Image 1 (cartoon, rainbow, N blue to C red):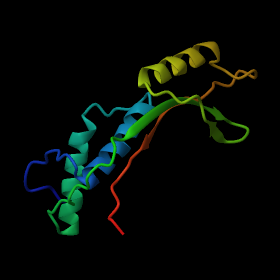
Image 2 (image 1 turned 45 degrees about the vertical axis):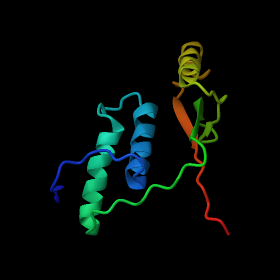
Image 3 (image 1 turned 90 degrees about the horizontal axis):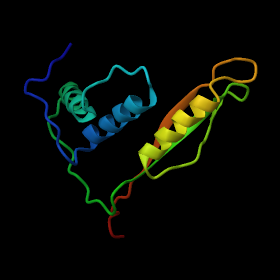
Image 4 (image 1 turned 120 degrees about the horizontal axis):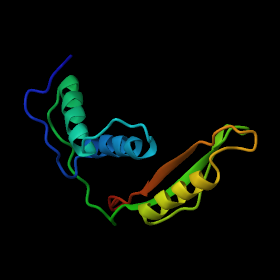
Length: 135
């Protein structure tokens, strides 16, 4: 396995690191059995360093100016086993409210009528804005 030659550190605005961190963060918050205990940015820094080494480059992509800060919403979703899909829940601007909704829904409806345990998850939607080049 290829190892990075220098310590990996988080770089704000690095698109590869931010994409990896977002993916890791999503997993950290949607799986109650997750064993990830490190800051996703540290994991992303190492993953990006390894990816760049494999690709033969050490250059980071330049950060694009942000048009507006990213917007996040959270929701508690319920898996419908008959339709085999996740049912979207109410969107909350505050993560804490979605977590409370998830806990409440789990406490009042831990199983379906036939006794099958319900599956619920916390999801985060992120909307980002970038500045486009002037035509």
